[in-house]
Amino acid sequence: MADDDTDFPPGDGPTSGISVSLTAGTLQAIRERVGKRGVSAYLERAAQRQIERDNLDELIADFDKTHGPADPEAVAAKRVKLTGGTSSDAGAAA
Image (cartoon, rainbow, N blue to C red; front, side, top):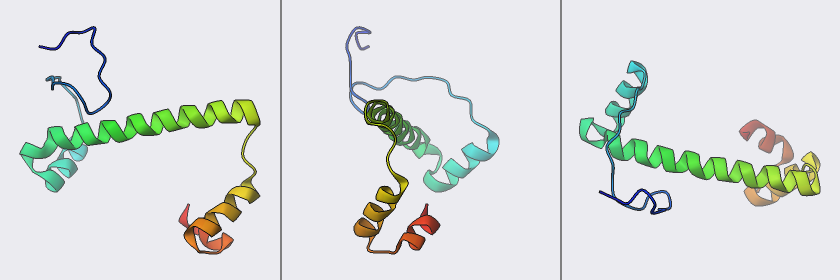
């Protein structure tokens, strides 16, 4: 058993069993994708992605607090540059 005082980054450290409640439909969809034996690994990856998103949201909030919100026109122009599309394509993809 791991020491509770040890900090591990997401995706690292020993595994630990917990109880998780999911709606029947969500569990069925997961099992259809990965089978019964893949549910834990699927949920681990989903939790890691959510942590990454939460961390990114915090970074964006800190940036906005310091510098103000991003200019929507500048964001659209950068999106066009990155995707090679037009600004109207970027809106449809969002």
